[in-house]
Length: 548
Image 1 (tube, rainbow, N blue to C red):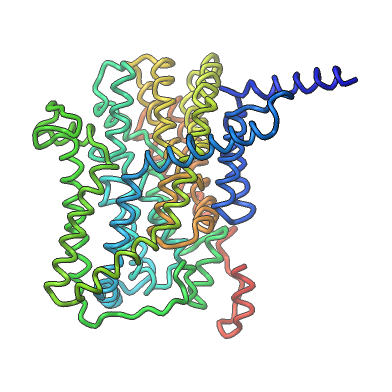
Image 2 (cartoon, rainbow, N blue to C red; image 1 turned 120 degrees about the horizontal axis):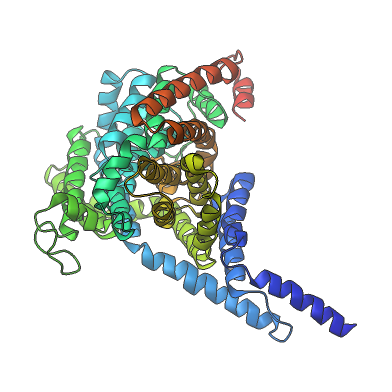
């Protein structure tokens, strides 16, 4: 009997040990995402995902190994291969977050944010105006998605608060104009990443050329902009976002993380105290990125190929080094400027350092756990699983492959939380499927990039989504749950558009059809989901019931 039990246990263990390159590789992030959506709590959900991933990486113990050894191996994988590796790999982004948090604390202490809010109250008098201003600023800051999220959030929070836009809606506007605009901007950190992957794929043309060719077919990014403008001008929301917007409008509760705290404003502050530091931050971050990329002669790795070549210097840069480089200079400038203007004292400036750090602790913790989870997923061979899946689908569905690639990229980016990792996996596969001189090749590349952005936009473990929550200073799970219906709506329209693109193979015609479908979908949603129940503003119970 004992021998039979050992035999059965060995069979079960052997079947579970063969997890590399199978669907099991995607189970840890899917569990984390499901828990986050159910519990509305990110930290424990992500940690459970990391723990499950570590158990899968270590493998289930043999009968002779013992529980103690298995526990030690699992814990070592969580700490060494997960958390420590995540901190080491994203230290530059952590530093950028802290520096930006301190900068924001300085601007708030100086009264610059309050002054900007007073200016906005006089010049931006409607919710539509504030929402459009957030959208435009998000489109203009196309250099990097992290930089976009935190800068737009810092600038637009005073304006959106004045117009009673919920922080959840602000986070959506930030997130929807971060990665999507970076993915269609030839001068951005995302263009650099795509270019480097495409160069290595042997397409016969330069990576940046391929990126530019793919822009007209990047329907998710382009239709997201149409969706944002449409939903702003049509003045309606649906899903969980509708409840948050209604609560903000009728009670003034915006859902901010710091809501309810006493905030004192410096009467000496002027609008220039916010605008000038932000402008300096933008300039120094751009200079920092091209400096690291070798624009001024030698790059961070000793190469000279990108000297005085702006585009290639951007393609060669490392934003985790360039952004902290620029943020540190901007921070020093802001401290000196505000102290010289006698808006704040040197002691007050120093007090802003721990305050800015504390403000960025939540996104740093979430980012650490999310990157740890991505490491487990990569170790389990998620790339091999997706590669085999795509190769099997390439046979009899040639013209429908752009739509299939878009869907696979969405699911992979959603599960792993990384768009860069997703197109890094899929671009070589697309290159192998389509001839490099065909229109379908360009459409396939673009659908891969669009799907990566879409999945990244939806995923609660995506670093860009985490940065958008930090920029809007809203609870992360609240941001994810409210923006998910919006992102899925655009994804559905994009999927249909990619089906048509594979058949028609004309960027302009398909884009026009996609725009028409997006606008039509918005009208249908407004008629079916956009109607409000009559509410009495003087009845707080009624308002709160609507907002639950």
